[in-house]
Image (cartoon, rainbow, N blue to C red):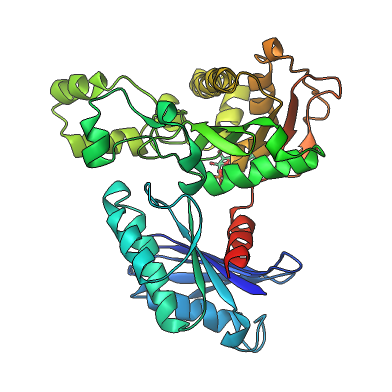
Length: 397
Ligand code: ADP
C-alpha cells in the first residue's frame, strides 16, 4: 500500500510517499512559504535528483495539489494516478487527553482535534488545514491522525500533574502532555528489537536530542514520564528554547526590562537554549562544536549546560523506573554528535554504563556504543517519524 505522510505547518508542509510493504520512500520533499511570496516546492524521487520549483501557493490546498502533481509527473513522478495513493497519514501535534492512540479521521475526530487548538495554537490549526485540504483533493481516501502526544498518555497521574491547584487540571486541562511521542515510541521499539529483546521486558530511556529535545522513560513499552510538558518549552535546554526554569524569572525580568508576556515567551522560545547561552552564536551543534574546538568559552558553556541537563534527566528517569536496561540516543544531535554522547555517558558510570569510545565513532545508523559487558546498553537509533506514521496508518486502514 502507498501511504502519503503529511506534516503540515502554518507556512510549510513536509511530505513522503512510502510503500508500506517494502517500507521504501518513493518520493519526498517539502513546500515552503505557503501563503507568502516566493513559495517553492522541493521534490525528490527515490534515487533521483532533488528538484526545486518556484510556484505560487496561496493556500495549503494548492500546495498539496502541487505535491500530487509532482508525484504524478510524467517524467519524474513515481505514480501514474491518484488511485495509487491508498491512505494518508497526518502528523497532529496535540491530541490532549482525548487521543491515546492514532485514529482514522472522521468529522468527530476533526472536532475533537479542533477542541485541542488552545493547547497548541501554533500547530493544531495548521495540522487541521492540511487534513481538510487533503480531504478535498482526495475524497474517499482513508486518512489517519497520528498524535505527538498520544504515546505519553500512559503517564501516571503523579508524573503528569503539576504542583499547582488541582482545579487548573480539572477545569483548564493544565498537565504534562509531552511531545515527540511518535519518535519515542518508534525508538524504544527499535531499541528493543536491535538488542534482540522484547520492549515489554525492558526499561528504556530515550534521548531525542534535536533542535527540539526531550527525554522519555519507557517502562515495559509504556511512556511513564517525559521532559516536555503542557507545551514543548519545558525540560531540556534546546536549540533556542530554555527548557526548565524558575517561573519567578518571568516576573523579575518582566519588571526589570518592561517586557510583557508575549515578549517574555518569545525570549524563552526563540532566543534561549544553546543559542541564547552561547551569546547568540548559534543554535546548531556543529557551530558550537567548532567554537568549543577553538576554545571559545561561549560554545563550551552552551554545550556543557545542554549535556548537564540531559545527564540530570537520565538520573531522574532511572530513578522513576527504579532501574534502566538501555539508553537510546536519537534525532539530529543524538544521531550525529559523538562528542555530546561521549560527554553525557561520561557521567553514567554509576548506572553501570561502560561506554565504548571507538564504537561511538558512528553516525546515523543503529549501533551499540557501550561495551558488551556494560550493565546498561547504550545505543544510537536513528528516528524515523514518517515511517512510524506510515506504519500506524496501515495498521488502522
Ligand atoms: P528538529 O527536527 O527538532 O528541527 P533535528 O532532529 O533535525 O531537529 O536536529 C537538528 C539539529 O541537529 C541541528 O540544529 C544540529 O544542531 C544537529 N546536527 C545535525 N547534524 C549534525 C552533526 N553532523 N553534528 C552535530 N550536530 C548535528
